[in-house]
Image (cartoon, rainbow, N blue to C red; front, side, top):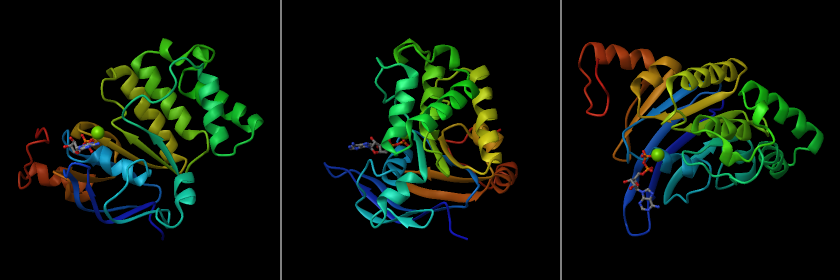
Length: 240
Ligand code: ADP
Ligand code: MG
């Protein structure tokens, strides 16, 4: 079966010469709930930037549901819903407008967009705020708005870059439940995090990135077994 995501030999050298990615190899199966775990500066956001074509790669190959981003970028993009690490919406626009505009970029008709906006605003407990400007939302609500926005074109895969950083525990739990539910419906989920506990709670498979390299690519169970036997120690992972 085609992988949801297949990355090989991926390198990124930023202007100025810093090499953020040093030959990433990664495979994520369709329907997986996958964690990319690593400390600050490991290259998580750079990897996601390349996958979503916001960052130009220096070398290597990326395929999204079989679509090479160098050859079929639009097809690859339509498979992905991205929840970026930084808030990147217009803070002065009301929530419904943000969502409907997003659907418009993907050619979703207005009527369908309105139905979806209502569905996701309700599911993510933002319905009461639908006419408010985004700047009126709390941090956790803004994060949920970005999740709703990422789903407006009904992508096969959702990629979330540190979605729960700075979000308090109640909201974090609700977000986890929502992501689990989406995954049950068949949506592939990839999230980056620097919390091992979060990956453990949610994910079936995991890769650990450090210094621009994948240093581990295994099942969550396999990783935990290694941690238990203390054969695997990495500074970044809070070992129990
Ligand atoms: P993470 O998301 O894992 O915290 P990033 O992918 O954001 O890591 O960054 C990886 C490395 O690349 C860091 O050392 C960071 O400082 C560097 N970096 C990120 N963006 C740029 C950029 N635009 N120019 C130069 N270096 C960058
Ligand atoms: Mg990052």
